Amino acid sequence: MSKSIFYHAGCPVCVNAEHELLNLISTEVEIVNIGENTNRIAEAESAGIKSVPALVTPKGNVIKVVVPDYRMNNQTNFNYDGVACYMEVNTEKKDKPMLGVYKVYSVASGNLSLPYSVKQ
Image 1: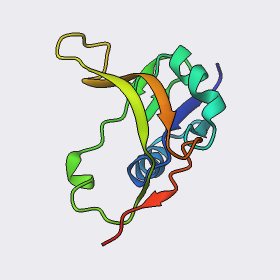
Image 2 (image 1 turned 90 degrees about the vertical axis):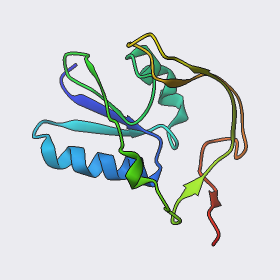
Image 3 (image 1 turned 180 degrees about the vertical axis):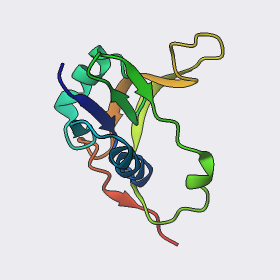
């Protein structure tokens, strides 16, 4: 692999992390919005991505991007989708996320297009 690949879900928090990362990185980075490119989810999983946003380096290392919770507090200008899935809470294995999605049963929009928005 000759470039880094940044995977995210397309939410405002992920897009903000994308912009901040791009300002820090001087090498070529491919941006993959798996909310729009669901056909690349398996590729992300095989690269070791367990949660997004995340970055895969040219050497194949996965860097988890942790978004501070204060960035989500009181946000009212975002879209979302509904997902029925199997999740597990992990408190012991450091190679797994604390809360991981391990099987998706259905997506309300059918394609993770984030069609729903918050109304005040």
